[in-house]
Image 1: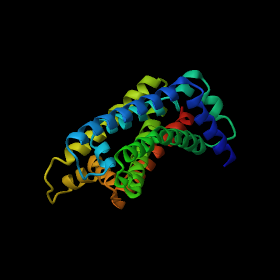
Image 2: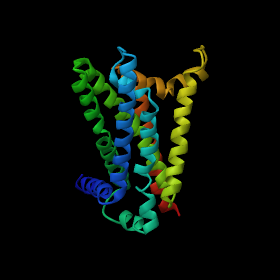
Image 3: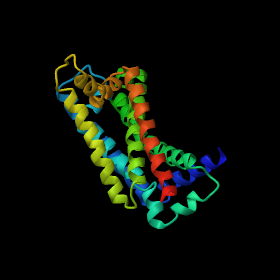
Image 4: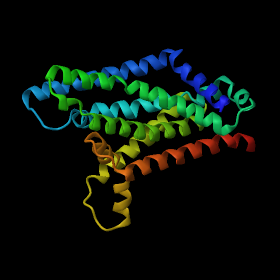
Length: 250
C-alpha cells in the first residue's frame, strides 16, 4: 500500500510540475466558461425548465472536454516512461505491476476530477445571477458528477491501455482518441435505431453512452449504466496490466 501511495503521489505531481497539466485545466475551464456563456444567452431568449446540468450536457462542449482531455491526460503514463528509459527502472523497483498500473490510473483519475471542479463554480454562478435555487439542485449536480466520474474512468482506463502499447505519447493519444470517439459514435448511433427484440439492438442499447449520461445529467442514476462503466473500466485496466506484464515474455 505504501508503494502504491508513493507512486500515485509521484504520478500526480508530474501533472503539476509540467505545463501540460495547467494547459489541460485551462483549456477545460475555457470550454466550460464558453458553454455557460452560450447557455445564458439562449436562456435570455427562451427560458426552459430543464436542469442546468442537462443543458450543459447537451452542448458539444461537454463531449469535447471529455473526449479530448482523457487522451492527453493518459498519453504520458507509460509512453513517457518507455521513451525516457525509466520504465525498466520502475519495473525493477520493489513494486508489483498491479500497483504500478493502479497508481498511474489513480493519479490520472484524481487529476481528471480536479479538472472538472470549475464546473461547480459555473453552476453556482448561474444560481447566483438568476436567483433560482433550482439552478443548483444537489441531486442533479451529484448524479452529473457521478456520471462524469464513471464515464471518465472508462476513457482513462482506455487511455492507460493505449499508453502501455507504445513509446510515443502522440501515438498513445491518437489511439485513445480514435477508440474513445468510436465508442461515443456507437452510443450516438444506437440511440437513433428503433428498439427491436434482437441481441444486436440490445448490445447497442447497452453501449448508448450518450443516453446514459443524459440520465445522469437529469438526476437519474441507472445501476445498469454504473455496472457497465465499472466493468468496462476493469476490462481495460486488466488489458493494461497484461501489456505491462508482457515485457517479461520478450
